[in-house]
Length: 290
Ligand code: ASP
Figure 1 (cartoon, rainbow, N blue to C red):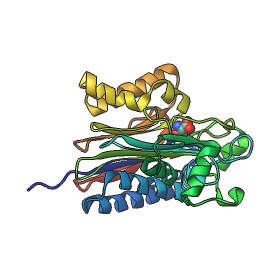
Figure 2 (figure 1 turned 30 degrees about the horizontal axis):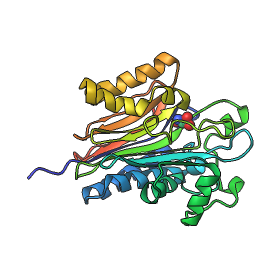
Figure 3 (figure 1 turned 135 degrees about the vertical axis):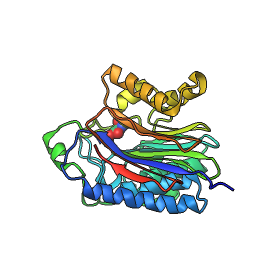
Figure 4 (figure 1 turned 90 degrees about the vertical axis):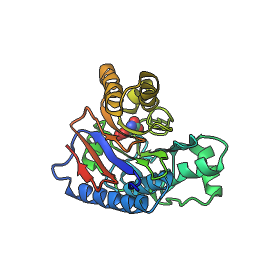
């Protein structure tokens, strides 16, 4: 009998390089992929593996998400995240969320127990507090902005974390989490938690985007990638390249990771760098920045 097929891709954001040496980020991402490999090889579910990988990337503080997120223009931390199960198309998302440790765990809770897909702001907080999600009580001590110099210069930068997974049962899932654009307006929500823009999974493909969210929203980027496979019969790499071409045509910058049911992975970007990596049942594992 042939080995079951499974695969995972992760990203830590596309954008201008803000460091010369990314060895810490690369080592951490390799660790995340090794753990995901272990879970997938023993039959772990795509949705759980995607959530676990994104939580680890949030916690690392290496990216503009979770612990590494930066405050908005008012000095408040407002985070966005989404998770989608391709098998059922159930999804959960949070926007402009304040005071919770893991936005991706919050999104998963919404997927699991809410009849709604997307909760934002105070209503989201009330819902999640009731379900006991872990809080951040002292944001200025907890968060360690991963690109402090850019925050101080007022430069608009971006970087997000995401995972797309195919499990050995053939199920696909996508998860994305972000602190959003640096120096963003209070109340601004990007593409990350918008199902069909920054995050998507169905029976064909799982997609997680990163970059200037407004462009990904205007291109319905992740849903468009799936539609190109479905209606155009495009292959994965070509569909992803066309989506990114559309973003570039509008003047947007960023990248995406996508995986299909055959465990094929594509990770295109039009920026200087995108922290990205993948692992598959074929014993492949690789992480790159440039
Ligand atoms: N896409 C995210 C947003 O616009 C930011 C990023 O990926 O860096 O909020």
